[in-house]
Amino acid sequence: MTVAPELRTVDVAEVEAVVAKLCVEANHALREDHVAALERGRLAEESPIGREVFDRLLENARVSAAERIAFCQDTGYAVLFLTIGQDVHFTGGSLAEALDRGVAQGYRDGYLRASLVRSPVDRVNTGDNTPAMVHYDLVPGTGIELTLLVKGAGCDNMSALRMLTPAAGVEGMRRFVVETIEKAGPSASPPVTVGIGMGGTFDRAAVLAKRALTRDPTGSPSPDPKLAELEAELVDAINATGIGPAGFGGTVTTVAVHVEAFPTHIAAFPVAINLDCHSHRVRSVTL
Amino acid sequence: MTATAVRLPLTDPASLHAGDSVLLSGVVYTARDAAHARFAEAIDAGEELPFDVEGATIYFVGPTPARPGHVIGSAGPTTASRCDAYSPMLVERGLRSMIGKGRRNDAVKESMRTHGCVYFGAIEGTAALLSRCITSAEIVAYDDLGAEAVRRLTIEDFPALVVNDLHGADLYDDGPARWRRS
Image (cartoon, rainbow over all chains, first blue to last red; front, side, top):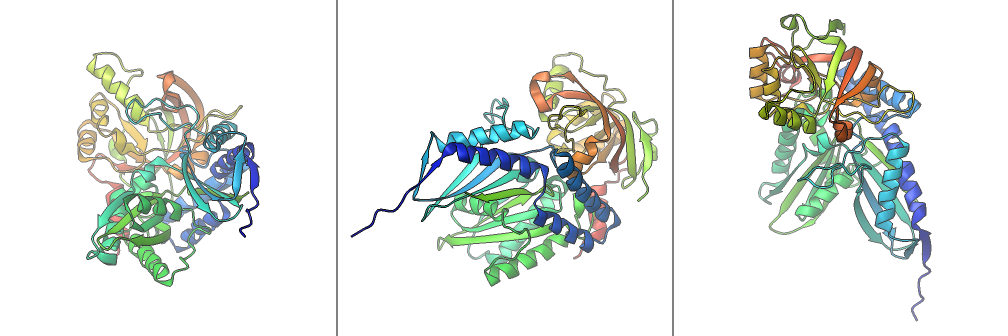
């Protein structure tokens, strides 16, 4: 006999309030582990200008958190990753609409910039930074995990996706990563955090890359030893470019490379590279 | 690193060199993608620009809303290259400096050298600190663009580095070249 699972009921108003709070927190205060990553970068940096850039980034983090103002004026897209237990039942209306109301509320409360336009063609500002860019995952159980990535456009614009061949392999992927970083140069606001999605389909690789940026703590290695090794090699290759903090020249161009992989086709090797600027803003909660 | 105090508008742009650390004081006008598109429309239509470009400085920025009692919100530089298509027409009309982040294309660099315009680089992730260097802000045009409206800012001791000077040097080439490992 199959026992019917116990459903958990959640009012979308609860999710809305959490999203609003996360938007404010993420934009005003860098996550502690990212501050720690910047401090490690400061110690490793050899260029005097580069060290000064790190000092100013760290001072900016202290000031923005203390004065409750945005760390960066580009308060970005609100990218939400929702991992929802399949036995959760949402009440009180549309979850998607609640997420947008939460973003709008948070951006008002936090004095954050409305940066989204309703269409790439007519470019009229939506006025409240909606819609949120939402990714849903369904998993067993009754839990809800919500991660907000505040994604600046300058570095998103410098991101890239390429459908490599299996023959190009990991070496082709390395070259593609370095090429993307070189092309981005100062425009991605280094030191960058690099999210790489390998495998899956065209679309899956891009989502993996974005999700990779949210790894906590920033700069922690992949649990897969092969990927962890690749991450360390890529950090070295990226830092060898000499682009440095703010692109003024230096030995630290990235503070973290996070690689995520997924099964793919016998004919395919999709690689997506999503760059995040020195204003790396992520917050997560479990509901 | 010792920074040199520099007044805007620049009176001696040739004295600046790529890599110089400066503290800028004076008046700047904010403009980014949407405002530049309107400048181009105005020029095409033979209309006046909303401020006198001769000698002026453009800061590529779209600030966050100001908290009550604050002059302005966070205000770091945005990527200047998105305005590369428009900058030469302003440089030809006397624009003397620009503040932003990221490389400029060859057409912009050539027009800057020809007409005497300097490009300064600031650090985007210092937007909260930079807002403290802004002592006044007023919208002068395109109010409907919100964060992208053209604002007249007074800045004091605003930290930046000279990226493109009048002598052909580019900090975004020279800095990384010094630290590159082969």
